[in-house]
Image (cartoon, rainbow, N blue to C red; front, side, top):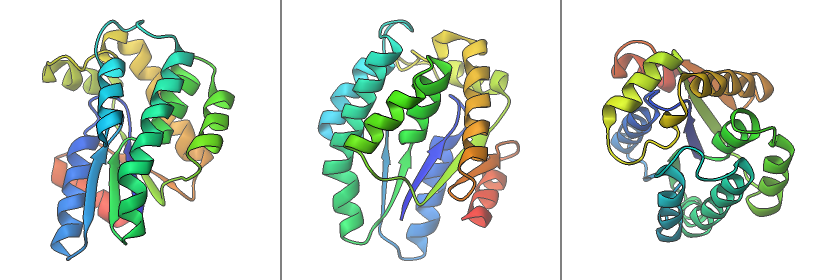
Length: 198
């Protein structure tokens, strides 16, 4: 299976991806835990271009192209080889993030995002979990992390609110694949909701 975790910045998806990977490994499964942008050497180089620097460093169109290039390398070098050998792949973000960030919140580019995805990626996760939390809470968490990977947090609360709306709309658009998970409570409580939905 290919499983993705999605949501606004600071929603807890990275923690939840790790907890699910640990739970599945405890059942004896081979699990590859990865992330986007990144997950392969070439994609990690592109990651630095995307998540560091000024919020308006790139246009939404350029971001879309860079994210898609990183995703293609990730698919070729990490995801497909793992799926081909029967592993479960859990990725912290995949195409749904591009659909929401560049396709809805940063610009009205959904048609471009979907066409690029069809041409260059061509697969969807078997299950996608959107961790849904209050945008102000997510922004506070993301800001508290510190570090240099804060480009999207710098775009402010209004941007995070548009992201949250976009992810909720995506869950309604793809009800067979996307599960909206209440992100309130302890990490273990959220993890239990995810395992139940899986």
